[in-house]
Amino acid sequence: MKSVINQAWFGVVMVCGVSALGAVPQVEAQSTQSVPTVQIPGSDATAQNQSKLQKSRRGVRQSIVLTKKSRRPMPRRAADETPPQIDRLTPTPGIWIVDNIGVPEILIGFTEAVTVPTGAISAWTVGGGAVTNFATSYDSLTNILTVSFASPIRDDRLTVVVDYSVTDSAGNELDGEIADPLNAVLPSGDGIRGGQAVFRINILQGDANRDGVVDAPGVPGALPSIVGDDRFDSRADLNVDGVVNAKDVGIFRLAEGRTLPATDGVSPIVTAIFPTPTGGLLGDLDKITVGFNEAVADDRVTLRTCFLVGGNDVIFLPIFSAPSVSGISIDYFFLPALPQCGTYTINISNALADSSGELLVTPTAPPMVTGLIPPPAPTLNAHTTLTTATSVTITGSAPGATSVELSCPTGVFTIPLTNNAFGYARHCTPGNLHRLPP
Image (cartoon, rainbow, N blue to C red; front, side, top):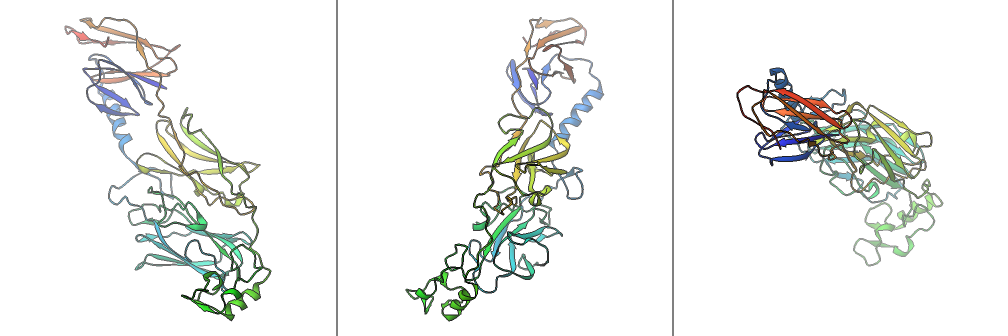
C-alpha cells in the first residue's frame, strides 16, 4: 500500500503510474494503488529520473493482447474492436431431437467472417465421453461452420464447445458465453471479447414428452393429424415432417424402453474464489483458485476454462491449471504475475462439469478482483511552509504503507518507510523563496 500527498501549485496525482494533471486542493490525501506522491519545491532531479517517469506514464497506457502462441504482450490495433458472436445454431437451441436419425451434424453461424483454428471445436457426450471423430467446414459466404460427425449422435446428451480461439479478421476473440447451454439465447456473449460458447442437445429417439425416458408414445392421441389441426401435437411429430402418423408410432416402438444417460440432476456452482473479490489484492496476481460445491471432472478442466480480463478488455490466459485431489477446487496460474495495480474480471466457463455430466452454472455477474484499494492517508509533520533555505527536509508518516513518492516539478523519488515514518532532504535553488505544503 502506498499513499499520496499533493500540493496545489504542482497538481500531479499519480494513479497506478499514470499522471492526472490538474488543480488539486492545497493539501489533499489522495488514495491510489500506485507509489504515493509527496510534492516538494524545485530540486536538482536528474534527467534520468524524468525519463524514467515519462516511460512509466507511457507504458501503462499501452494496451496489450496475449496471443495463443506466446504470453509476450503485443500492441493491440485500434481498428475493429467488435468481437464476433454466434447468432445461429442448427438444431435450434432448446429443442430435443427425438427422431430416428439423431444428430449427424451441427451448423454454427457467426455474426461476421471468422477464422476457426484447429482445436477450437470440441464435443462430448454423457454416455460416451469425448467425441473426436468429426470434421469441420466453413462457408465464408454465410459465415456458417458445419461440424459433421462420422456417425450421427443418438440417444445421448451431447455437449459442443466453441472456444474463443475463434477470431475475426482483426484478431478479436469470439464473444461466446451462453448462460443456459440447453436453452441457448442468441446471439452469444456478454459484450466483451473472449468466452467459450457451450451448447447441450438432448437426443433420444421416440421421447415424445421429453422426459428422458421412452415409456409412453404420446402419439396415438394426435393420430392422425397435420399442422393446423386442433389435435396436432408437435411433440408427437417425432420426425418433424408436419404430420403425426404411423411413421411416428414406428419411431416410438423401435425405441421403447430407451433412456438418456442419467446425470445426478444437481449442477455444480462456484462457491468460492481466491483472492476474494471483496478482499482486494495484497500483491501481484499469480494464481486464481476457484472452489465448487462438488467435485468437477478432471477431463473437463483445460487452460481455456478460466481467463482474466484486464483494462482495455485485455485477455490474460493461465499457463497452468491444477485441480485439487478432491476435485472441489481448481488453481489457475499466471506467469508473469499480473500487476497488483489493476482490476481483473474472472471468466469461468460452463464447459466445466461434474462427474455425472451436469454442466457448471456460472455466476450471474462475473466476479472481479482488484488491487485498487484506497491506501492509508499519509500525513506531514509540522514544518516551515515558506523558506529561502537551500535544503528542505520533509518528514511524515503513512501507517500501513510501504513507501511514498516525493514529487517536485523536476523529479519523483520513492522513499521507503521505517516504522511507518518517512523523511527526505532535498537541495533547493539558492536565493528563491520556496513554499511547502502546510
